Length: 408
Ligand code: GCO
Ligand code: MG
Image (cartoon, rainbow, N blue to C red; front, side, top):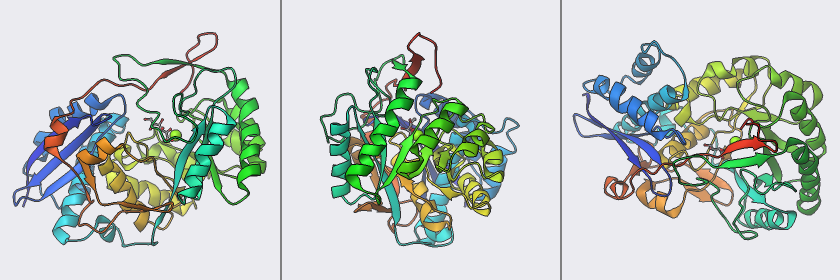
């Protein structure tokens, strides 16, 4: 048998998603996610203009060979656009193989290594009262791990913190604005560094020692600033401090490590095992943060996590709403199968997104399970998808108070 059709579908049920649909000559359908937040059309064009023709007629069972053909054979290796496109093909091929075998994908990856997957929720608030109410809501729902993001006195808005939600209300702070140009936000690192530890102190005081706490620095600190934050958060026992410095400077993590035992996570903007090479071999991080959608799919992510596992480094896969439910399903099958699972990020998609994509994964009291539907257990309703055309939407740009463009 072989692949007979390959279609790229760009849809925007609440936010933009890029989906690949492969159909085999005997009618088995496979789905893949190539969503690249704010650069969706580049990933769609890479698939449509460069990959689709090479897929027609290929043996759908040869997943590793197809992965190597698209990665090694392309001359231009790596990069977010390439790796998101490869990811979509790879997920769709795994979906097809598992459907043909009549088993959920995790069975083909070695079977379940655990019963359920611990997830962390996103809690935020402009002030402590709003944050505390958000955390309480998640604890009542059974979550045992919560990411804490706080407003900073003197700044109008902070990425990752809802500007509009009422205290305790759930929100999706993305996409920030659906417009042809990114919003511009202000940033002040000294104010942030002064404020964050005081918030964690209050959270520990109110919620006690057991709740797992995480924090995302969104790549905004210099190495020495990051070291200072990691050190000042040590008494509050974080599960991780994420993206403390810009990701491409792997050496920066050495400096943070020298100063602190706060566990470190990074990688949501990485797209290959080579982005992590120094970080993993020198044990400079504790968690790998990529999504299968941005790292060459199930095959790429398995290679990365097996490599990390040798060094005792665990998974903390990226699970924001800008990864489609298909990409999320791929992450959950990997999470269930690997030995070195750490935790999974869970930012539930909007109702509109979940009407357009159907999924079989389930949430129960702070834990997810990928479900037992054969394949990935996630698919796109093409009729509904057609009702939501692509709309430009960008992440904000970040400037210091004097107007200097700053790191993300
Ligand atoms: C996270 C993230 C996201 C990203 C978003 C960008 O840790 O989940 O930092 O909120 O900002 O995925 O596309
Ligand atoms: Mg992040």
